[in-house]
Image 1 (cartoon, rainbow, N blue to C red):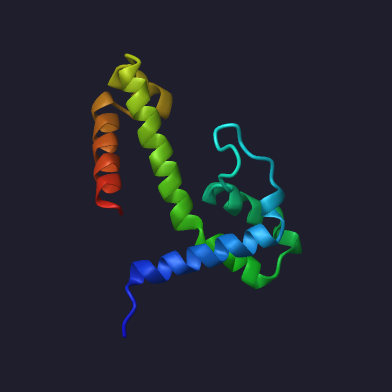
Image 2: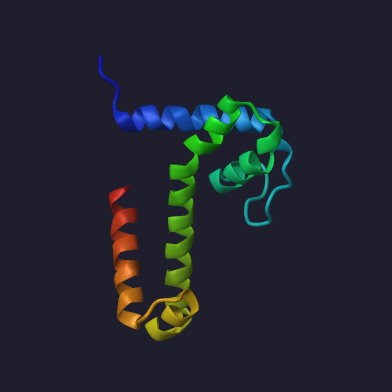
Length: 123
């Protein structure tokens, strides 16, 4: 029986989370925006692996690496949320482009469209 690649990746990510939490990431202070019992984010776990890199075994470092795709997805969600809220608060695409370092409002808007499409497709 062939396993779906998404299921395989999900299994690797779950194992990586458990491994890093067992190595001490479970003692990280909760973020105010992620109150208990919500566990640390994948971004936090990847940071933790990097912070402890000098003390970790190769398999522990692999756990941090296994979470990078999930961490990127979290950051994409954060970016989409902030862009949505900024537009709702009345910021123009020109305002947002200047804050994010885009060369034009159109480039920023196109970036948001691609980001929203990527998030909508689950990619």
